[in-house]
Length: 537
Image (cartoon, rainbow, N blue to C red; front, side):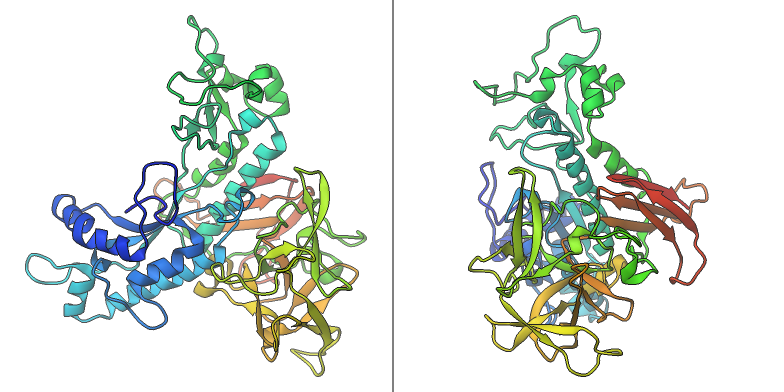
């Protein structure tokens, strides 16, 4: 990549770039040198978080106004992405999926523009062969996730199983989401770190699937310090690594670390196993297939997490509903991530559980879409950014009877109502219902009609031809990714890999069908609470 996180002001050694200066650096320096000395090396631009990715890469690939012939375009083979949130570490890995779809659509269009170009234009966009002809055009630019980690510190140092497990779940969610949106791969920040989350000379401590604890290995003849001598940061008064105060047996019980591997000097955290469920079976050559966790056939009276006879939404506490979370639309699952209330003041509110404070807190829809992420985010109830609405009954019909249909008309933005911004890239392998965004639209738009159930808290829409959707904080508890593995060497007849992820506190029963809801099930199963399962089909 041209430069790690060029738009930030890091503590570590780096060069700051905006899209113009990065283009100049690639055009005049990096591009010509690599083309001459290392022509097989591919250059990826950007290499930072998804909030600015579309605007940045439009400089190289063009946008709605057509292709741009930036001087650096012929050297750029794709774009690199990081998973971090610009707002809060709790949102790392959960921000910017719609932007990723927009970037994928932009990359696809650029590939088509190049293929359709004249020979002269191809030479300008792709460079020239020695005989004066254009280089072979690529089908599509590379999109690669090049950095992801959880901060601050390691699960071993924090000593909280729930934190470690949530980090594992977030990693699996982010990988599945990015692959579904069109990413070509995933790179972890580090696979192994020391107990702090280093070594790191600027004390930027984060987590990894494996933690090196050589001082805890069996059969040591020499004493080894818990914190390596080459780690700049050493333990201060009042500072501790909680894992160091537990026996290996105790850690195997309370944290799930395999004692046999601790005896070899390695702590294997839940993140390792969650990642392995994907990395061991979604191998190079795999291709994502259209697949989504749809609503159950029982409709509103029988959801995945609110089965028949259950009162109230299931799935456990909604811990991802916080200020800054994107508001999206997915098939209805009957969970607390899809349970809303319309307040007397006119806010669409959601209750979040703040684990750090141990308290229930109120968040609501913001009044306008975020300019960088392209959709409405959650904000604090009653705050200056919170949206205020009048709930207005709909007259007439929309796809049938207009029973209980309403519009949420904004009091802050005249002549606009709550609506749906559809995903670019047709929603990737999840399809159009896999995370479309909440936004404000002219009230005449067909997507601005809603059903609000005061019993279930569901705000649902029949806008999509593929089925109903419910307004969701971030993403649903139950997720899945399906991959065609016929082109993967050594798969020995396996045609598909299916990864199912359940982030909820409840078990979830599911069936797998091909093509439509009426086809015969290929599989019936149940995934336990807080689990990941991989099926080879």
